[in-house]
Length: 92
Picture 1 (tube, rainbow, N blue to C red):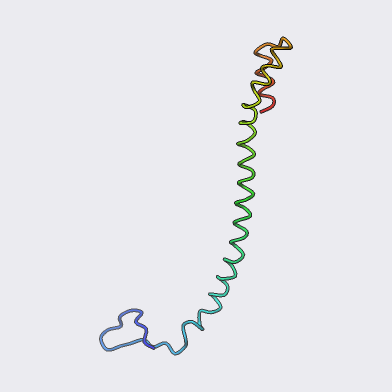
Picture 2: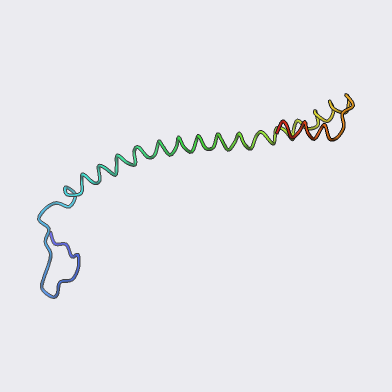
């Protein structure tokens, strides 16, 4: 098997006496195992970070959705705007 890696001048060829696939098989196996482990770990990290991000997004939205209920409760009990604002910010 002739492998032309670089030019050594006219008339010279570099020959490899072993099979390239056999020579690189241990490295390929290590890379294969590495990516088999890396794929599920990265999916778990993605799932964990998406759960954290969704929680930080949902809480303020839920507080805004509940704001009319808080305003109604506070106005019925005679609360001021300042008390309503404090109550809203406390729950966000």
